[in-house]
Length: 283
Picture 1 (cartoon, rainbow, N blue to C red):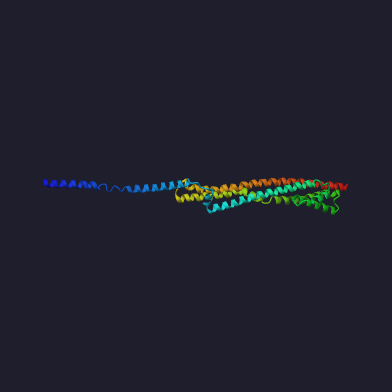
Picture 2 (picture 1 turned 45 degrees about the horizontal axis):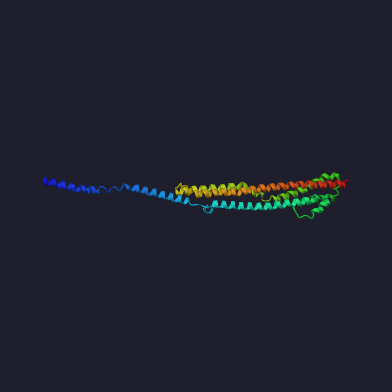
């Protein structure tokens, strides 16, 4: 019995260290999910850090334009052409308005020296062609027709003669003002519609940016900011095209109005000259 108890005691003492050494072996099993989660979190943090680092870099306007999608680029091209054409019209209107104003001033200075219809015709014949001269030619042509009919010195036909002269001059005046106002409709269209065209490009770009957010499954501002900034660039382009167009339209409209007032005054002066000449001949 004593020998048996000794053997059992020795076996228990030998098995205890083995059990103690083998017990820690299963411990790594529950660490697997923890390591996977840590790895995923580390990847996410790395992606966000890279995005933030990229966002910290300066983005130029050229880079924003290069990253525009097809629709946004089309909007930018349309607005750019409109802006260029509007600026070109500015120089064209300045040249045309100054030329018309100078011609009108020169013409009126010469015309007001005349004391009769024939004298006015002789003076005007030497002046270069202009819108106001075409008005004089139309009025003078009607006077000559009235003289050929023998109605020029008849008081009963006086009112009819004045009406025909005024109508002839008004027609030429309208034609001249239409020439001065060429492309005004296009300027008005740019000023009214360019902001909406730019807004369309912005809305489209923001939609594309949100689709990109859904695909990448990241809400980092550094990732989505370039796309949204590029989309807002379309709105800025729309305003850049609209503002000059509106300013040029207002400038041209004011100059045309001033020119029209001068032509109205000239028409009144010419009719008054014809009326005095008719009274002198009738007397």
